[in-house]
Length: 340
Ligand code: PLP
Ligand code: COI
Image: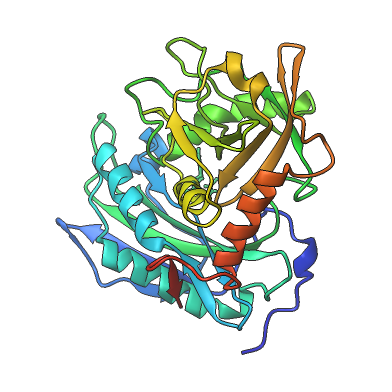
């Protein structure tokens, strides 16, 4: 199979239309067989549930080319489970987990020419999603749904790749205490757009959101969870019922313990104590592990000892081990790597 002629190493995090996408339709209480199609556009009724009341959930994972030339995805079963949780919270039908993994596999296979080569620094981002597709005018769930998967080749989420970023504490909240922060619903991202545009205008790469109830505890950013490293090399990550349970974060905690012999702690993290950490990073499928060099709290700077030039040493170890597992350089725990 011949790869597309793309300057893989200079890709940013943007949308490029690839050849095939998967679509399945839910009608009269059941999913149809689903198929791969070529048309990237969707025709919907003007009153579709997704357009009026934002009834949509999504996932994000990546396909990698390993050192020995296989195409693999990373823990897609966990994305399938999280999409089930998201769908239930928005009163949507569940797309069966085995079918989710099968749809991802078929879509990646059909777009194999778009999977960036090993060592290029790029990956194929996979976006499964589901939305209410029939008309809804009173506030209620739709009766018909589409489940889709498309792919797009991507480079680093933050400009500059592995360079530490500067973020700000947001004055806006991302999620309410008993709301939808823990699921991957489009509405959470719509909520964050005003805050991210403001942050970018002010020269920051991202926002740190605090807990909405007390505004004293660290939650997450618009698209990634936090990890902190203590001065004695413990990996600390915020516990909250209103952040997205990141698959990258769960994997990093395992890697820290089982591969690097580091202590880990998932607990409430107060903004007051952030200044005492040695390193800070963002973790997620898109972000991978992105170092944070500085956090600005209304003009007051919190600077990490790792500085603004490179990743902190423990963050780097975590990054190297995780990406080593994903790219097949390091042996993966049982069940983490799904060969396409
Ligand atoms: N938090 C938010 C708000 C996200 O959108 C994402 C991205 O999926 C993450 C965290 C990281 O989750 P994961 O590691 O499963 O990609
Ligand atoms: C992901 O990491 O997959 C996400 O969905 C985050 C998004 C901000 C691109």
